[in-house]
Image (tube, rainbow, N blue to C red; front, side):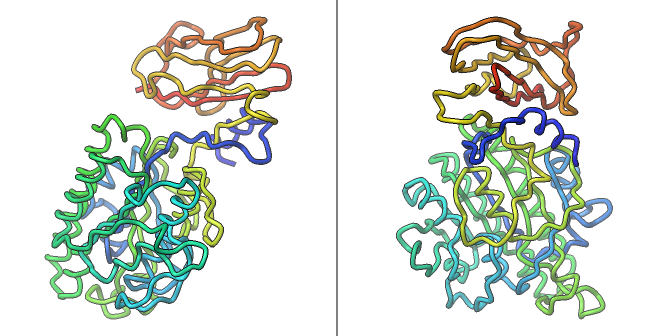
Length: 400
């Protein structure tokens, strides 16, 4: 078991059967670098063609390899990513997915308007990914689509315009020029398209971090719908026969609920993205066949049985992340002895914040960001745990 899982086991000894959502993520961005082969993306030993993702972004989140076990062409590949299930669809845009998309799942669960779900692409045939033909979902729950963007730069620019103006909950982007350049057989153009996509992804992430509504609340996934033939099966110009070069793709995940600096050895698949988004946003994804990538996640920090009024629970720490002190508020359900402690990411207690008798109501206390010995705690992730009369709750604080 990962050390972080041990921490969460300590924190959530009384976890309910169905915990309320307590992840920080409120917005999700999924970027598909169309047709990038793993050996040129995050599988390259020096990240030569994705230096920003490999050297600057991956240390802030998680990276690994993912295996597309469906049809390794564009439309079925995107269906795997956006529906969480493999579907043998036509690749010409004549067939919509028959299982719901993540956009439909989100809007069905929340009642959100179409403006909260967007998909941007420069491949017109991918417009069918906006919604499925499923009888319980469909067009009324679909995403808004812009398939008129002529280049990857235009895709990102259009997506940024919507993201920073309206702050939608779920945004998907297809960056197609890597695949288009690969099909020309022009190796330098293919590599140049990968490098351009890498730059665009990094710039997008940095702009998200500069937006007050999105920073600290946005999860980013970067993957590929398929790879390209390995040398034994014809080389990079084409794809689709199911060789290792076609099936092996990258997975990069960043955001407030992901571990940092993790190189995952887990067997991930593109169909795992939608279940993970479902867990982060607290929405049901009943027809997805993938699995939550829980080894990448810090964990669900909700605790206590019974109705909310009868549970010990934290409000969101303020500010979080922080470079100094943080204010912590916990709702106490009754009278008793309250204990509050700070634990590091390995589950070691580093500070005691409270030992007192208290009655019902909200109790607010500050943590200075220092250990019990008075030293400034190192930058990183910490957990504040509250315990009282069989109740337990925890919240996460990030020190910068």
